[in-house]
Image (cartoon, rainbow over all chains, first blue to last red; front, top):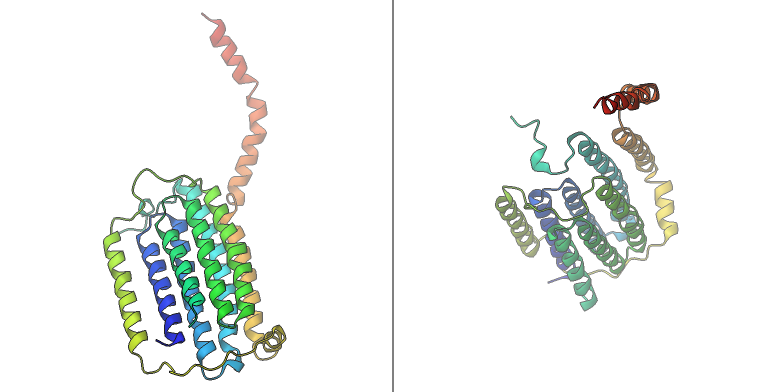
Length: 103
Length: 194
């Protein structure tokens, strides 16, 4: 197994753990944590392909990860603000109880 | 790949697994910080030092604190009595296991993955700054705009209420002192009657 494959397997497992948490946990904040873990797995993939790719001097992987980190920060801020707003309205952050849009 | 890389990867994955499986939310946030530190260590070993330190600053420094504050504000610090899993958790676990199986199979059997490993590239902060200011200057500006909009939007969403109800609150506060003298008075009268 090459080093690149090790990196990709670690990142695939990180993605699967984050996905399982985001899908199965009830609390809204934990869903956000799962999404952050999935984003980190994608960033790890970018860095691994940049490091072991043919043209590391182009810096594309690093740039992509820096921008995606900034977007993750914005996403976390807006997501947690939404969780707080929902808690203020519904007095709960349990996602099973927030189902006003359910048909 | 060195054994240190394997150890770091195992620590990262254990932190992520604990972050997704513990009952107490504060413990989950701590395990998440451990997982992010592990990812930062992985970046350092992949010759991306700047990204590694940015990861520690952004995730361990900012996002973990933000999540702890959200736990505080939603008063969910203690573990709940009922189940922490959704009703369809078994299907969720099955789908994520399927996702990992497909990804792992693709990684292990792909022919697009280069077999030989190149030497580690040397990237200084000066290189990154040059690239950010020349080739990637437009994405940088757009990210600045996105962050500004997200900041304003997050503050607007998490504000107490709209300005209308705030005015109502002010009105209630103004009314309360004028109506409060009547309440002790009525209590007095009802208390004095028997």
